[in-house]
Image (tube, rainbow, N blue to C red; front, side):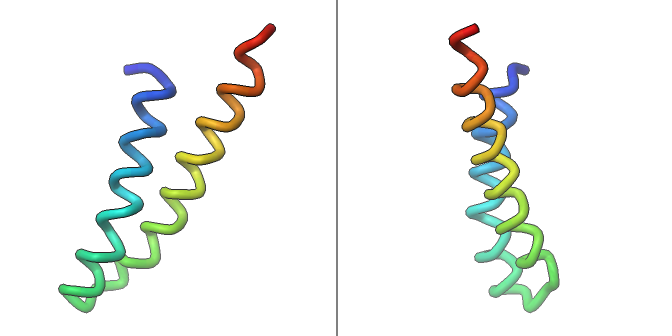
Length: 52
């Protein structure tokens, strides 16, 4: 598993968890935005250092 694959998986999970949390009235919905942010940061830093 590459960092890019992990970042994409985190983005997908981050998009799904708020929906599941809202539907189930669970606090898991608050984890979704954190995973989205982490996925975006991984993709951004991966692109930034790719040119070395």
